[in-house]
Image (cartoon, rainbow, N blue to C red; front, side, top):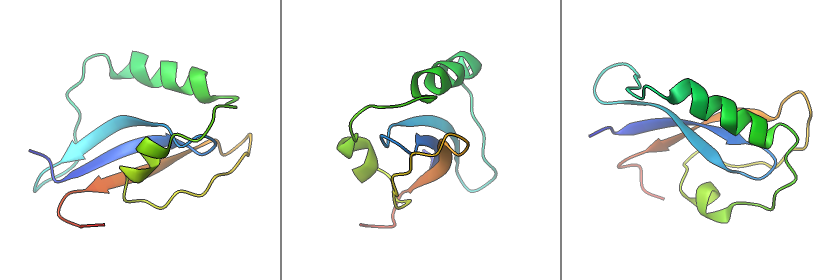
Length: 85
């Protein structure tokens, strides 16, 4: 079981997509369809005008700051087990 998960987050609506996880060593992903999933996420959020995804925002430890910036549409964010909120 991973103790740290990395996601990509849309900075407009807060939606996330899993990128990788780690457990006592480096990050890795084992999804064979990760390229397709990432491309679909990027396409869906490239010009995002969706409402805030409160559930996704609350599930991640990295603070969310909404920004509508064409050139900086996405960010890396983390969920860390055992950190407590």
